[in-house]
Image (tube, rainbow, N blue to C red):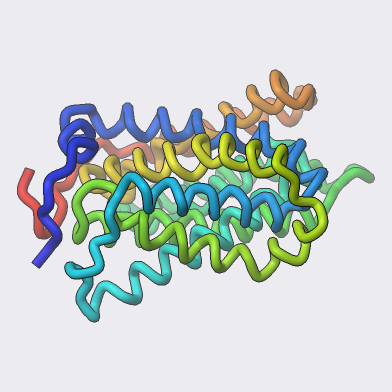
Length: 295
């Protein structure tokens, strides 16, 4: 049986339109990513991912009791998979923005959820939108230029694959566990996953200032956005959620400009526009009732 223990946050989440939760989560993710660049310079991408996820895990354990008694054998694989996917996605994305502009990394990563949306669509035309977004990514990355960074692009693509898996698994886990209690299990798993790479990078560079910064960044990402996404995905199908993320590359480009002074070229702006257009064209507004929980 699903965990039906009511929580104040779950009730609040049910009262807010799911698209509002998703957009707020996007803003928090991109701001947290932009502000993480300074910490990456100190402890590396892996170290930053590990510190942020560890701080987030502690926060979730404090505010949400892990639903250990509600876990069934069939829940173990989705919970573990979501934790590992979260950890890998975080490491890969931070490694990407260490090498390429934030807006470009977000656009490449967005191919993950857009592909999820296309696969779940019942219309063949939906498969055209990832192709259109890919054209936009080519304009963004400008592979014909000397500054083309294949490694950074590869990390962003890996983050996109992780993001696609994250969406599917978050919905499955959200169907079983009310509110954000499952995150008090999956985020510690993500932190342990990130520790494999992060601990060796961060050792010798951890100070009280670094820990304080990591805690602040953890609130922006993963705590606030992952909690909001968990609540949103319980009331949206993967298609609607994945394509709503279409505006995230534009948010990344804007914050990259404002926070990191990363000025895009006209061609790169056109690339972002194509990615956003692809997401908007694929948009579906269908809502879903979580299996195991009646709205």
